[in-house]
Length: 169
Image (tube, rainbow, N blue to C red; front, side, top):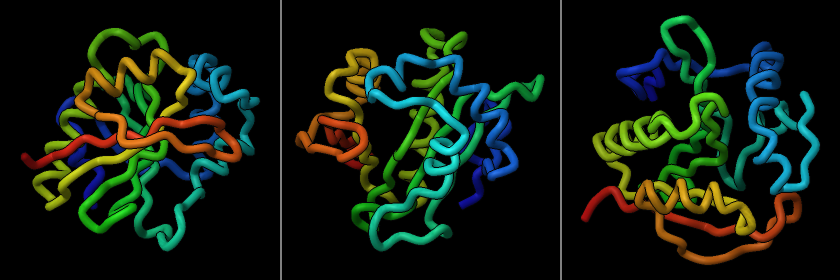
């Protein structure tokens, strides 16, 4: 996947282990996410997110990317798994917008453009999960046309809502 094409408004590139310090500083701006999951933000946790893969997927299927503005400031981070849980589904493992940019429509515009890109690449849906107890996440994903499919327990993140956005009608 050509990640540079994921946004017309931002510069997009793969984030690597060398980027952990900037990802860490970025995530510090958004403590609410970690509060709802009862997680302590650490560089080790970020490394886990950079490398975590679902069963049956390889590093070639994972795109942990950063969206940068014209001043090269990290605006959003997105973890995309190509073809999971089915070949025609993309999975968002993590998505966060810089807290100071929250409420400006940036997250929604990134997700809309991503979904259009995925549809053009032949995907039929996008799936994700968010913390059941997190009203901000619930509101954001519902506003962005994701519908709850089921609830699930996660050993690390607790009770989760699995949601999906259909890209084709």
